[in-house]
Figure (cartoon, rainbow, N blue to C red):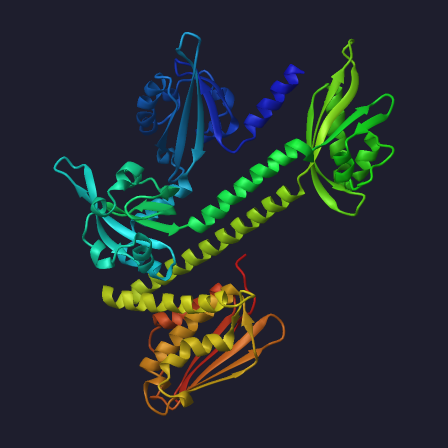
Length: 576
């Protein structure tokens, strides 16, 4: 039995996704899992018995050597390690050392756990290259966003930070007017942040490049709120995004209190208790046990077979195998499975069981408990769904903003022109998003989008005609169309039909019956149109938004009598 447990433990350690190793106080390896050995192009057997300098590159060992010596202090710690010299491209990991002390208080062995943080590090490095002005995009966000520059003393140490930028939401949350913040020192406005640990954390961000994230209660400096903070290094300073999560935190704490009360109730009366004689085939059960299985008035006979018949068919063989193995090894068992209750409900249940032995060491009876964990499982699945959806939306929004920034920068004549164009395009996305948020179905009406984004460019009502079918779009389709409408409207107001009196724009929407919609933009009465000699940013953005982002088609025609655009794209596009 002991050898089996050891084998199971070894299997678990070899199949985790993180890298694990152990070494003695002489720094020679006594264990390495496959992931750790593979990191250096070796097998676990090739690692065991070796010293790190035997197989690490000089660049890597130079980082590791002082950390090895530090581990002999007996204190656990972690550090960052650059593995780029392995010639497999940029690679960064976090290394955790956990020394184990002997009875005489000397280090007897050192557990090493390595986690790959390459992706996070690359994202942080990418953030450092962004110009501060790009953070103006946060003006559209309900979250606060600020940029700080370091103030260093004569020795080069950071003694404070200077405010360089804050969006409107940041001003509201910080409760200071903008003119009172820009150019002032951080500790002058929030001196208590030193005691609260924020100042030291921001210094660490600047000096190490490590991202700082926290959710903390702040009841100092005229503020009283729960705040969620994320800070990244930006030049010789940092950018910080923060939001007031007081309501959410209060709800979370209330939920935890309710869960605590529920756990007390479960421990007191909500667990079903059972006892089974495997030889006599008799059983004893509490009323709660039978209630969970859908028998509020109890059931006369109960056996192991009765239990298995209630387990959902696709899990019966697996559950039976778990219990048989536990009985063969005379071990306790814990099972989480689904059952078809007699009242017609499908429930998640957790079952603890263990054998009771007679004087001869044979199993005399089985006892255990059962709990209904359906509500917990449903809540877990709901949380996972919300997290997946949040990650999906955040990634899409960041990718869109990054693409717009790059494209706008290429065509901008100067920084002022870039900021004006970039903000205008972000407002187009915001307009589409506002329509989505105001819709109970999280969809956007095409006619409403056209009216909201194009109408302001028409000096007279007669200059814009909107007709066709009523069509609503999913979030991805609406965001892309919002950008396109903005480009078409601004181009028409600068060079096309909306640039002079008498010019008109006619927009017709046609529901093509499947998942596609066609929008025709037709200009008339404007200045003569000629085909451009080169492709401008506006044309590229329209093509990118419709043909690549939405996998549709965009035909742009520069007819002498007026520009025409025919757009065909899916109403319900979503990123794969």
